[in-house]
Image 1 (tube, rainbow, N blue to C red):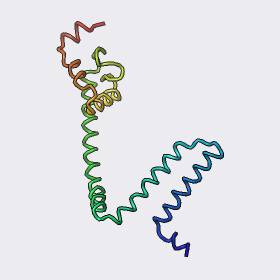
Image 2 (image 1 turned 180 degrees about the horizontal axis):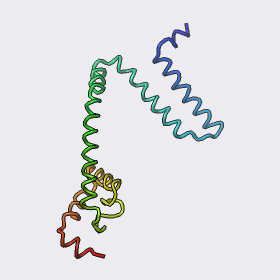
Image 3 (image 1 turned 180 degrees about the vertical axis):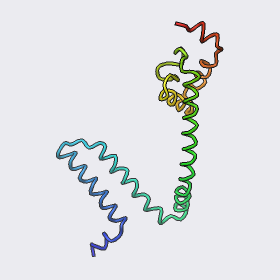
Image 4 (image 1 turned 30 degrees about the vertical axis):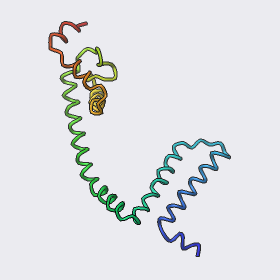
Length: 150
């Protein structure tokens, strides 16, 4: 009768998660091993156990189904966002790549390389000091050619 427990896949999953957690705790306490990344993976699987509740709650099941069905559309939106970031990073390198660093334009926020341009755009998308960058880059040609010459 105890083997009936292992006939259901969710019970097998629960058993594996609990066993892995117990082994990890045993190794940490008695063997002194630090298994930080392994514990993170086990925690992720323990959180996945909550998905078995989706079967029982009708409203939660509908929300989860809607989320899963919207994932392909979100991938399309993310692809368009990446394409726009790529285009604007290339444009930023070509327009602002030779601007001397001053003010909020520093070694972390500039357009000298493609990677830095991409990181600067991501930083601006999150709202982190984007207006300071805009004001530093919106000066006229005279400022950049005469005032900042080395």
